[in-house]
Length: 99
Image (cartoon, rainbow, N blue to C red; front, side):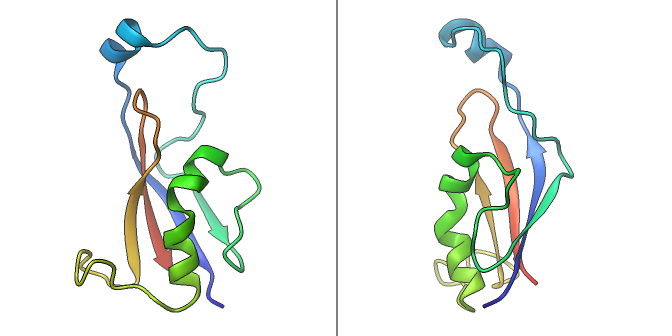
C-alpha cells in the first residue's frame, strides 16, 4: 500500500452565490491553499474535512493500491489526480499524488 499526499492547491470563494443561496454559517471551510496531508493505508487524515474526503476517497484508494492513469491519460502524471470538494460556494481543488 502506498501513501498518498493530498495538497490544497486552489480555493475559490463565490460570494455572489453565497449571498443569493446560502444561509449564514458559523464554520465555513478552514482549508487554505498549500495545506497538505498524507493518507496512510488509504485512510482519511484526521484533520481533513469529511466532505472533501468523500469527494476524493475513491481516487486516494486507487492511488494507494498502485493503480492510477485515470480515464486513459487524463493527468500528465498518471500517479496523480486533481479533485475538487463538493462545496459549491467555496470549492477547494486538491492534488492527489502517490508517494
